[in-house]
Length: 165
Image 1 (tube, helix red, strand yellow):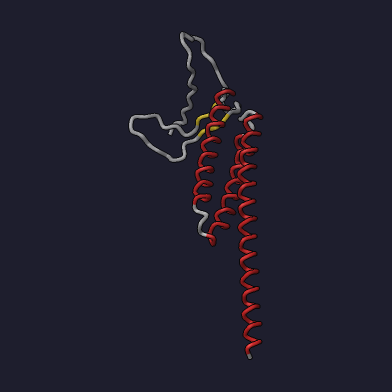
Image 2 (cartoon, helix red, strand yellow; image 1 turned 180 degrees about the vertical axis):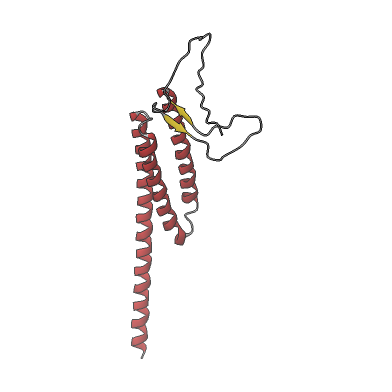
């Protein structure tokens, strides 16, 4: 197969020839997730964005979508915390998802995002993390208290049984 590469430029009445060494240009890489073949269309394997403002917008949009998905996941966790046995595990899974998103934001998107926007995202993730940690703490305290009450009741029953003999 012939390796064809294209450079798309939007401009009116530009009759000059421009040469770019696009292999050496650094930018934001976009690749399709699935290898979708559409009949009578150009199949694109990779798109490199070199416009800084467009890179910032695309990275911000991707991070906002991922953050919204995380918020939806957290909403499901908070709504379904009636089941005591699985809620602690769900909260811990939520903490894992927060740490994964934080790491992904730092590794993939921080260089393309504005500093203020990245700090705002970090603050939002910190707030979610604090909420989950506090819920885990209170849940563990609740389990510990129930366990201690059960032990106390068992001791009471044992001491009553000994007195009746």
